[in-house]
Image (tube, rainbow, N blue to C red; front, side, top):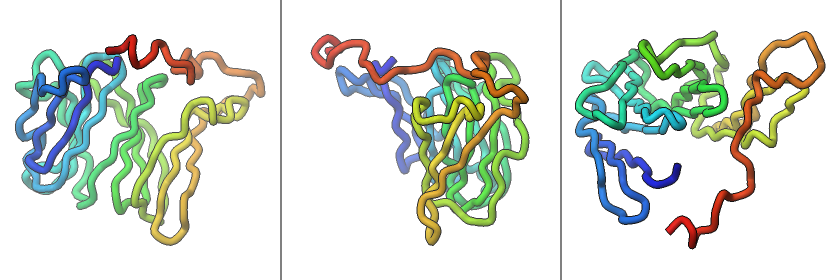
Length: 197
């Protein structure tokens, strides 16, 4: 909704800050036990957030939290034992999470469901031997809908520049597929900045 935002800091705490008052409203102390950094993203309008970090045994993990009760996570998923930070990319239209590891060539795909077990691993995702330094998601209006492209990630590499990675749903028909393209955010603002304050 834009009324609050989340930050993760070197103290491994996640803070939820009211955007209008700039005050910390809620907080997760020690979201992950490891010494590496923590990343956080909202899971759409579900009232849940996802954090990625390392466990005490240096394994990478994902935790799903309920914003109503931040005492303990709803779900913990062990991913692997690699060293790089996991950067989560969430597609709110399809509820698919793309886990991109810094220094990894692979991008894992998972699906979020707003009920237990919350987290479902999908196929192998994207596999490559070229490590990534950073990643971002292209807006929906930039996708090739006639090829059933559901998301396009831009992968930043050390030596090969920026690589576009296309994720598609295999379909036999060449027609528009409305089931994989629900209504999405537009480029027209809902209100002005003055109305928001």
